[in-house]
Length: 462
Ligand code: PNW
Image (cartoon, rainbow, N blue to C red; front, side, top):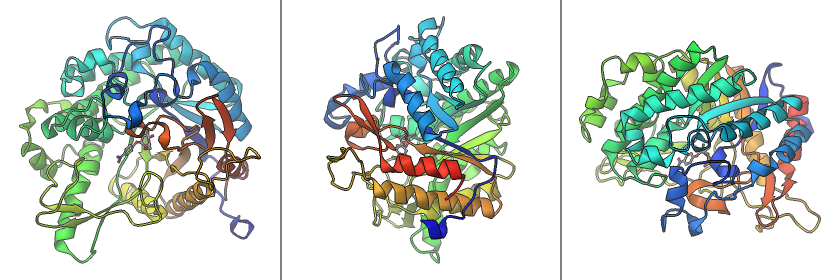
């Protein structure tokens, strides 16, 4: 490593780690928390690996103080976490539950007392079930309720939390939640997925407008934009496939967020599944409310070919019969995702060029790997030798650095994730943490990647 140790990041570069409420908190029925769509979904047979739930997870709700001490030990400057809406409004609307807010109040104070900057995600997929019973994100009213909820949270934490994002990966909420049903609430209807896309964006816009009115400091949204590449760079059919997938994953969010409205080709795709009458006059203006920061979550690139009779992707409505998603090529992570740091450089450069003037932050990047023994547990000496993860993170940080060197405005990097946690439909079997969690004892063990990251942060570079 020493021969390549000269890669320095900008002085103001932000270093940290990220988590999400349902994936780590546990305490699912405590202090007045209501049920979320993930409580229901994880109990639906066949939806989550071995019926795992977030009931206990990492028990972070009770262990947050120790976890914050661990973050301080690792030298994290920023910690991105999400607020569980059903803790704040157990039914999704109406009066706030003060005990729910109390928890985040304590967490924020613990972070600040250690000099760690709290970074709040208002929505990381745990919609109150009561709102889902009324259609969830397919219902326009959910967007309005979200803005009310956002203001309630800001009212309690806004004096101490400077950095906020509204939504995490609305692509996942819409397409996996309502399109192919792999995530909660498990609906399988392309039209519902597009309604959800719009109402999520509208919710973001309404919340942004409301939070500006109460003086929010720094506000943005986190997407999982894809680096979509053609199987054959010279093929026109492949270029058309790229454009289709890029429209469904990237431009459908980025264009309206940056004031360009929905692209015509994307609206034409939507119209094949559902009449887009849910897009009302004035909505695009609300969605285009200026943001200070775009969060980018990146894990792996997407390669597509234009092919008649192609299988398409279940998460991409309208791709069956016209697009073939190429199987990932090794080396792969435990998720089966290919490892290609260059995809992150390409993605950042593309956003920088096509959506100029938008400060970017990597709000998630990381990998699920077993340790070297394959046991996913500390060895006899208590070590977790996750050399694959170190290599993954090292490669992707170099990719971020390359984008910065080429002029892209990237403000920081947050590793996914601080802790091993509930990996949604995969349950606890996929471990993304730089800190190992023994789910029987809740013991935390920093992996070698955590020690490596600590060093990176302290040197501000590689
Ligand atoms: C993101 N996909 O999820 C989330 O923001 C995290 O909560 C999650 O733990 C992390 O990435 C790792 O998976 C995704 O199927 C889940 O393309 C699925 C997909 C993408 C992102």
